[in-house]
Image (cartoon, rainbow, N blue to C red; front, side, top):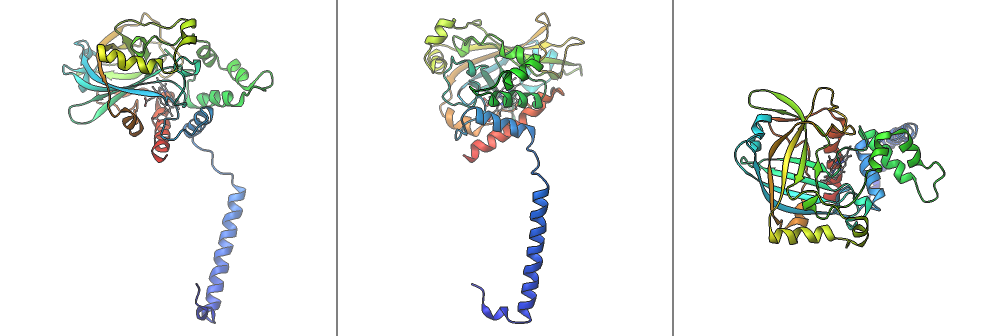
Length: 345
Ligand code: HEM
């Protein structure tokens, strides 16, 4: 409560003058706010907003994309050919422990595994290094991405969000796909779900620059290939699949045997697009075998680990550098927005 005595002159006059000055400044500030529209959010934050909206979220504690996941543990053993491509510490002779998170696309934590929107599948691999640090690979089950830059990715997501059941003809998504052939190609890809995460190939999509101990640098993209071979459900099997069939299959398989993938690098040739994730390189490009990932068991505190962990394709080590692909460079900031929100929920 204000003591009346301080409202007597000359203190009163001084206080009133101060309040008037403050309110004038406030009014001026308010007028400025009205004139200047709020600055637009960064594109990556708008992408996270639209992903969240599309998933019917926010879903507290979950990722804005690739929300449904499972975490497993294993080991990476580098191949002798790996050191010819890179001096990266985990690509020399010694094995490294790995933590791997498999996921379904979208921010829907309960999306049925065989649903077309749960495509592409994701894999995030964390290599634990001897010095206590780590490096990550974050890949998907499609060879290629629907957009060459974050603005186009946002455009695609916004077009999907704007296309309701009563959309006019052509709908926003039809208009977008009509002017963005890479996105059209992506949405038209066959979306057959895998028999198991153990039969799903994954692709790095973004290129990285690999440098070996002699200083030779080459651009390459990762590929992660199931040792048992790729296998997918038929349309009929996909329709009949249980909602969590991939997530019940993996622990069962791991209780019986290891699940293995080879990790390779597809080398770019002159003229191949290094900085455009929509451009798939020809299949005959040379593949350098980097090693074998052997998965052994489900991580005990998986749900807690998922929430507390942000995989980041730019967690890199000496011998592997980012390309200038704008999609690759946008990813850490988008993941950080999603991560920050999930920690705050
Ligand atoms: C501008 C482009 C992209 C944006 C804005 C984006 C956005 C996101 C976001 C917000 C998350 C959730 C991250 C978290 O909360 O930890 C995420 C996860 C993921 N993204 Fe992307 N993404 C992009 C491109 C890609 C590409 C090119 C790939 C694969 C080559 C990819 C693969 C994944 C995977 C596998 C996850 C799940 C990671 C995990 O298990 O923690 N994304 N993405």
